[in-house]
Image: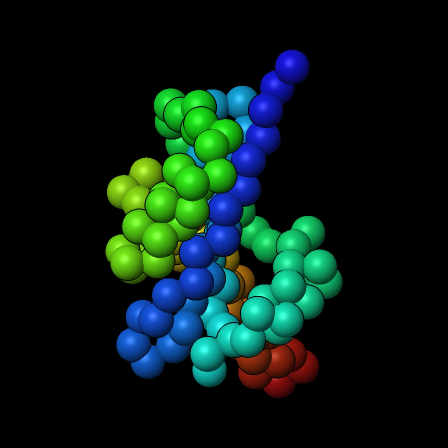
Length: 138
């Protein structure tokens, strides 16, 4: 049986509040980052999860080791308190976000290069058309 787990960390990254969704499926970690702006209330975060979770763009998967967490309620409370003290995201999550940013950057560069070449070709065709117009019929 394959296990899947998810975690949402909301923290203040000046000047905005940021939420990082971490999802572990089959030993692979994927991460999505969302900027909230003003400090979100609990019900706003819950509403966002319900309405927009499937619209999130998760990063490419990064392999990670899955830790089995004890089901002791006191231990869970202690871990939750410890996570509240530390801000930010883990290094694996940062790596996954960096991969996603690089992927987006290469796509954007490729798209802009295609647009530049298309504009260059359009200008060339326009210039050729004008040259043909000048030599027509005189």
